[in-house]
Image (cartoon, rainbow, N blue to C red; front, side):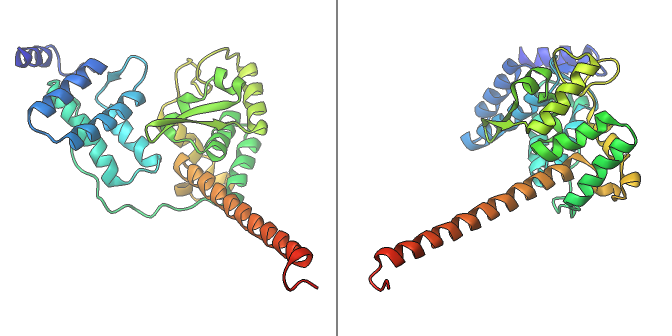
Length: 280
C-alpha cells in the first residue's frame, strides 16, 4: 500500500513541490526502525529532520532549491561541512521515502572546512557607517541584528514586530529554547523602523511586497557595503557578523573573570591584614 502511494505521488508531477508533515516524518523514522537502523541513528535523524522542518516556511513546502538554500544557511550559521552532510543525508532519506528524489540535493561537501575570515569591531563599525552614509536603513539594521544578537541567518524570521516589542528573542539551541535580550539601542531603532514602515505584525525584514527576505538577498545586501566600508567582501556576511558577536562575548567573559579574580585577591589581602596569622 505504501509503495502504491509513493508511485502515485511521484507520477502526479515531479516538478511540483512537496509538503512535509510531522506524520510523514514519524512514518519515515518508524520505517527506519523496522529496517533495523539503530536507536542512535533514528534519534539523530529525528533531530536533523526536526531542524529542517523548523526551517521551512509556514506552508512547509519543499521546492527544488529548498535543500540548496538550507545547506547555505547551515554553513552561514557556522555548522561544519561534515555536520551539514549529516543534515542533508537525513532529509534526502525522507524525500526518497516520500518518492521525491527529484527534490534531493546530491553530492557531499568537502569535510575540510575553509578558513573563515574574521571581522574586526572596527570593520563592523565601518559597515554601519557606510550603510548610514548610503541611507540603507534596512541593511544597517541587518548588520546590527547579526552582530548584536548573534543569530544565524535562518533565524532572521524570528525577529518579528511582536518580539521586538517584548524586547527578547526566543532561539532554539541544543534541543532547548533560550531567550536573547534585544539591546536597548537596537530595540529602539527597530521599533522606529517598523513604525515608519507601517509594520504591525509579523517579520520585520520583508521585501516591498511584504514577503520574508530570502537568504541570498540578505547576504547580498550586506556584501554590497564592502566597497564603501573598505571591508573585504568575504567578511561581509551574517556568518562573520555572528562570529564577531561570539568573539566579543568571549572577550567580555574573560574580562569579567579577570576582574572577579582581582577583586577576590584584594579581599583576601584585606582580610589577611585584619586577621591573618602574620598580620602586622
